[in-house]
Image (cartoon, rainbow, N blue to C red; front, top):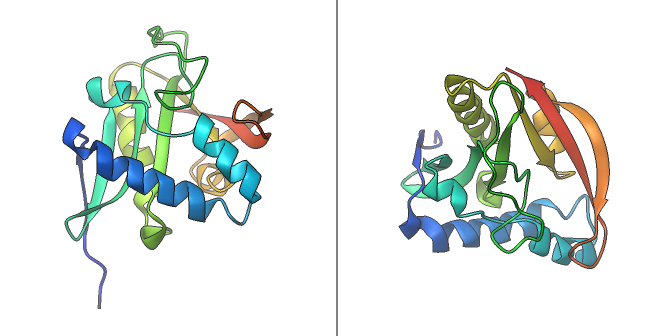
Length: 178
């Protein structure tokens, strides 16, 4: 039986509970091959949804069979990654002639992993950023996400360990020219 077609739309505030549940499932399951339990718990502090993306109308949901299967967005703001509760956020607007747009909060429900959802969202984000004059995009990849981003043309520019959640979590800052 073929899988249902993927559709996409902008996220709405009424999606928040579903998005948070999807993110929790993705962090808990898709990080297991790369992180230990303490790192996964720490990830919950430094990852998650930044509702500014929904307010800015730059956050997408992908649906399969009428259910949200993945989400992700882009931003014209300085914050590179993190949720509403993550320390160090900045709402400052980026200059498209100087700065790279941000790809943010990419998550796929574990039941829908490796079905093209991440690629679809990246394409939507890159096209939207390009239409606003950005010539590059950056993101902070988890170890689980790094292979996808590499396959989509992103290059690693910095490796960090973020310990703001109590235990160091390895991340990779990546960039792509549009």
